[in-house]
Length: 442
Image (cartoon, rainbow, N blue to C red; front, side, top):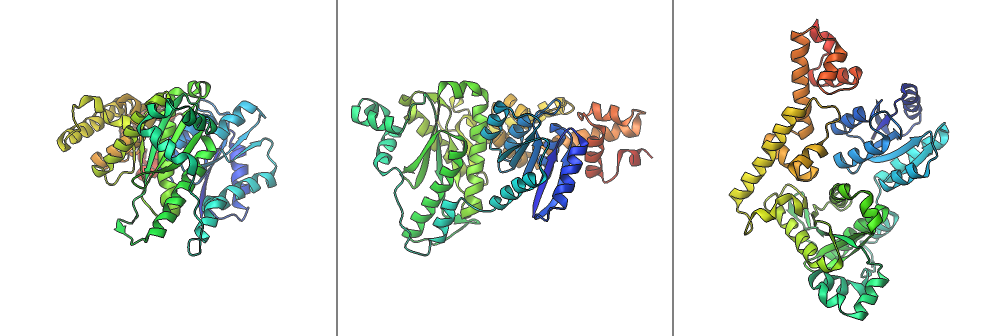
């Protein structure tokens, strides 16, 4: 069964869509509602949301901004966007962020339910290509080498770009692939044949099939939003080269690393979902020019190695590890010290800013110069708290003190601890303590 979150700053629309969904006969367990982006984000962090249905124009956080933050929190949440405006720019941005549909108000009930039904039906199914592949595993399934005439060239480019870039024939093949950039990043996918930490005895054909399936999942995810090429590499790895032209990179240069982080987690999530393999993902930085492909390749490979130190974590970004601070690979003690320092600084920042409206994990991560994904992992590992659980803990403890020891009204307390809506504050408070603020006051 699925959980759906409906977000609109008009309560009547939330109520109407919720009623429509509740009587639809769809396989829905819970329908949550929120009247602002900040309320919705709290719900996404605290509940298991499968589908987000959001208005695009809402107060201080737009539907587009909500989608961006939701992707960072849980990349697998699917989205349907609703809008009062048939604006191409909004629709384009929504689709770029992975929206499954863009519906115009006033909504047609059947069209809306059809859209929701289509998203839910596809949610637990792999792509048609992957379904065909999985169905053929027990038969004589014919594997075709992806990019057979180019794989050798691409792998050479990753090791010795100068030899490729000085060869006219090779440059012509790169033109065929439209590998122009000029900005590039490299992602490595290594999928050890492990299931629930137990090695399964796969034969050689099985290994080829699983590798082929992993590549297909990667290609499907890439084709949705990225200009990329995926191919086989040595050591049973799959490599993805991602590229941006000047315009697309400049549109959101500061957000590209967050998008790569989201992509890495989506890759791991979907490979585990469909193949039950814990793929390890290594992500390089972004550099300009094909001449740096060997650098990017080494970065992605080095990032993957960190799984040996953090074997319960699977997505690693090279830039998280401050390599420039070490003359050699850091020792276990240095790693431990560095991890503790990141968490301590994050806690200090949260302790000082937890009452700030619109505080996000992205903001805390940016202050620590690490990705949100890695910070969330370290914070939970070192403190036992999910990072956002820690923010809520501080907010709830402060609000409890204010309720018991002051005459401040509910809206004033909500304001002081970082909530823009007294109703939303009360909902979080009751979920945390089991009683409402007014009940506690009595």
